[in-house]
Length: 250
Image 1 (cartoon, one colour):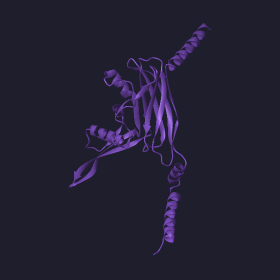
Image 2: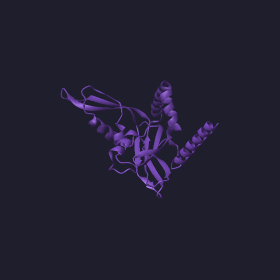
Image 3: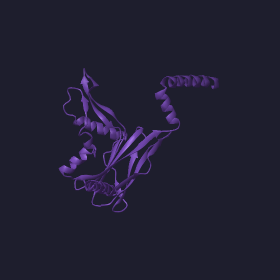
Image 4: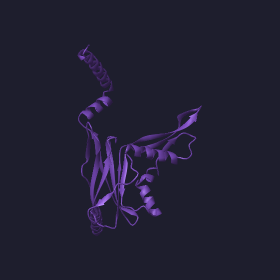
């Protein structure tokens, strides 16, 4: 009986400690759904949070849906420049942005923690699987080309987003979502870092989804491609016929 009582008390203490620690860090998303409609020009993800200890650091990572992404390198073949070499990054996020209060000058231990938790662009390539043509030895130029292409499209960013503190503990951060961002489920990972280690972590999700006419057209094109193609052909024929009927002849 005494042993059971000790076990129960220990369990309750562990739960209480976990709840107390959880209250040291809180992050909330302003809206968990972004509607993509006709004329969509982009949006943003707004997060608000609070930390109990002002001497801790915060890092927040936003990742879009993942897929394989191939980067090609041109080479001269018989006097013509063609895509000859390729490297495919497996399971990479189509959108990536992060915010952090961690200073730029960090020690090796903190750098390892950032890479392990996927914080910052260098962390993206730490453990990624690649498929490449046999003659490629240095993948650095492909990594640089990958980041450059994504930054040009506005779905990756060369600088972290700014975490704005309203006071010592309460903060706000905004991540821009361009019109070119793909739809799907976006993953938001938040970290509380103290003494070069992650002491709190939480994961939230947000959906970027087409609604209205956009959603109807997208669903028809993907789920009923034959009927969609026939409808497009029929509409084109009707428009051509109608234009010939109403055309003013000299």
